[in-house]
Length: 261
Ligand code: ADP
Ligand code: MG
Image 1 (cartoon, protein in one colour):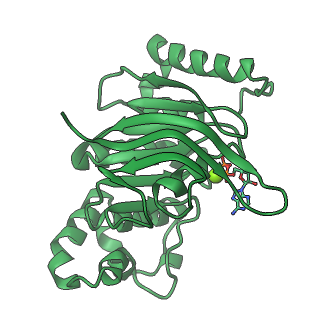
Image 2 (image 1 turned 60 degrees about the horizontal axis):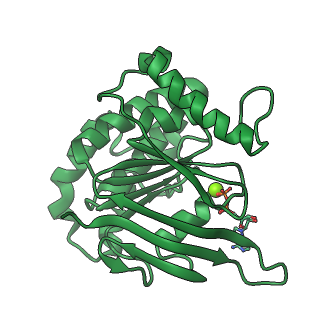
C-alpha cells in the first residue's frame, strides 16, 4: 500500500490574537502520492492556511497532519513552494535563482547543473539562464519560480494561486505547461486556485472548501484523460464537472452573476 502524501485528520487552525480567527475546521483528507490536487474555495476560506500547515509553516491548533509519512514538525526538506508573486531575487540571474534551494540546503550547486539545464529546457527558459528577473515577462518569471521549486525534486509541490497575477491568455498557456511538466515529474501537487475551470483542467481531484472556517465540502475526482488539451474545456464532460462545482458554490450562496467565486 502506498503512503498517503498528505493525511489530515480533523485539522483545525485558529490564529491566535485578539480576534482568534478560526481559519480551518475539521478538515480530513487523504491525498495519494503522485496526485495533482486542485484546492478551490472563496477568498479567505483558509486555502493558504492549509498549504502553510502542510508546509510546516503554521502550528496546527487541533487534529493530525502527516506529510510524506511523518507528522509535520517544522518545514520538511522535500517540499517545493510557488506563490502568486514569484519571489525571485532581482539581483540574481535566473540560473542562480533556480539554484537557491540547493544553496539553502548546503548542497553542491555544480552537481545540479544538469538538472537546472533540464528544467530550463522543459520550461522554455534555456536562453534566459543568465538573464535577470526584470528581463522576463510575468509568465516567464513564474516558470522560473516553478523551476526553482522543482530543482531539488520535492516529493510535494505546493502552489498557492501561482497564476493569479497573469493575464488570461498567459494563464491558459501556463496551465498547459504545468500539466506537461507534471506529467514528467509526477510529484504530488497541491494547487490552490479560485478558478473553477483551472481547477478542473489541472486536477486529478478537486477539493472544494466552504467559506471560513474552511471545511472540506466535497472532493471530486476528475476523470478526464491526459494530456488534456485546452479544448477539453469545450467538452460536455468538462462542462458537467464545472457545473457541479458551480452548483456547490451556489448552494453556499457564493456566486456572483459572472460565475466567479
Ligand atoms: P485564503 O488563502 O483562502 O484566501 P487564508 O488562509 O489566507 O485564506 O486566510 C484564512 C483566514 O485566516 C482569513 O480570515 C485571514 O484573515 C486569516 N489569517 C490568515 N493568516 C493570518 C495570520 N497570520 N494571522 C491572523 N489571521 C490570519
Ligand atoms: Mg490565499
